[in-house]
Image 1 (cartoon, rainbow, N blue to C red):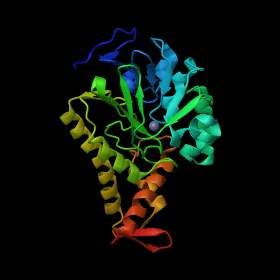
Image 2 (cartoon, helix red, strand yellow):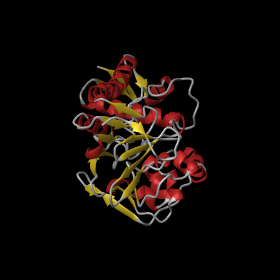
Image 3 (cartoon, protein in one colour):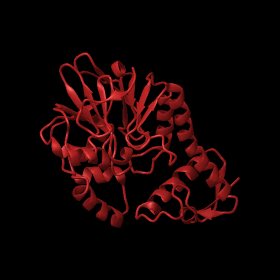
Image 4 (spheres, rainbow, N blue to C red):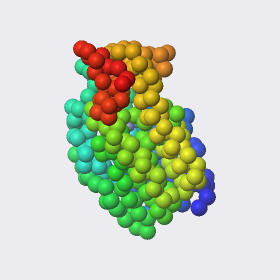
Length: 304
Ligand SMILES: [Zn+2]
């Protein structure tokens, strides 16, 4: 199946048989993203309604919303469809129940959270949903001649899930976004080990087209996808080895935060220190456990 220009009235929309990619602004660069429409004979599902969908509207009548996970940038377009049933993994449903529930998934420091709450409501149109159903790994939905299969891929969030649409030979990867930035596993509900397990799991996905929510967009060809997946996974190893080299001298978590292992030093955003702290703690804990690092004195760590 070859990608085609979609019949939907949407700039840069791409059709993959029963799947249409609603390409977001700048190919889905954050805060935007690439949403999907999956059309069966009985149901039409909108996956991850992006900020671009919130701004442009939905180009076709849909009757269900599916979410790869609950994060601010994957839900803004839901405001266009306030009555529609929403489906997400059971582990992420807390994020749709209330703003407090959503904030509990991030686990941000107080001051950062205060500003982020405002942003989520004002810029990402957050409001709680009541008509929520949950799925689990292996759930399968028949839209009438077209299936959506749920593949639980935790790590980014606890409930993060990929969707396989066999009739379109297409897998939707959500925030396993294959960018050079690498995997993001720094929220309260994230897990480094689960993310690694999920990346391994993605290498078994039987598809020809792989759609990411952000700017890598649509990757066609399984070998091309596997090479990108491998490079994406390698970012985790590179972060860990860079940290290990830095720990040749005894260093504290704050030293690691100041040095930066996730963001470049030039990046000036309010949540950077939080992310760097989380990264340093996660990788140091793992290296202490496997003996590559020891705590030498009062919160200082050194490579063994
Ligand atoms: Zn996300």
